[in-house]
Image (cartoon, rainbow, N blue to C red):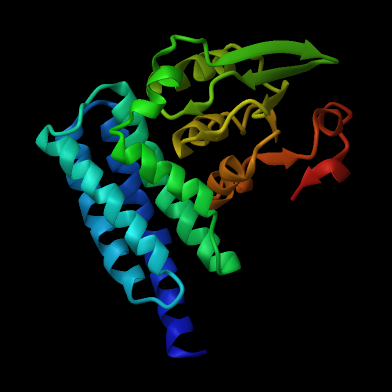
Length: 249
């Protein structure tokens, strides 16, 4: 193993064991609108990620992207950027995106530049681009029953806030233990890891499948390890017919 390979392995070991828990704690605080506390928690792992990826061969784009996310968080902390739900949602989405980016670089040696450019543009616009979907008041879920399966479709472009996750949690709490539930992400551009965390918390009591994720949702799903608890399927029919050959495992 080369020195570069050894550094990468050491870095991702730190990511899994140390940075993820800190980041999840910081995101939860942002979600609760405890801005200063959340940013303080996030500043430590993000500063380290920015520095380490800056001299890891092939990971330099992650360093530059993390720097822009850090700058946005500092402006939010100082009051230069608003602290309303659209800005909070953008902050959470951006932090999640750092980990999607470093996983893409690790797995493929490249990354989705259109995705990162879109986030960077919205950071510069101080979250104006997300104001519509987040503030629309639209119920984030639609439910239908097909052949004994409860199909929950997410009906918002981006889902990062507790106010959006709570209806999902409430619906899952009302479903009888042992039931089959399928989440359809076909209309969703991106979601936070906290949504998958909520869904996974019911996986002991419900048979839950996931379908319709785009590359960004899927990257977040796999980056944070939720495939250990939830199964992604090619289409609704595969889950409804209980066809495991249609599962992406």
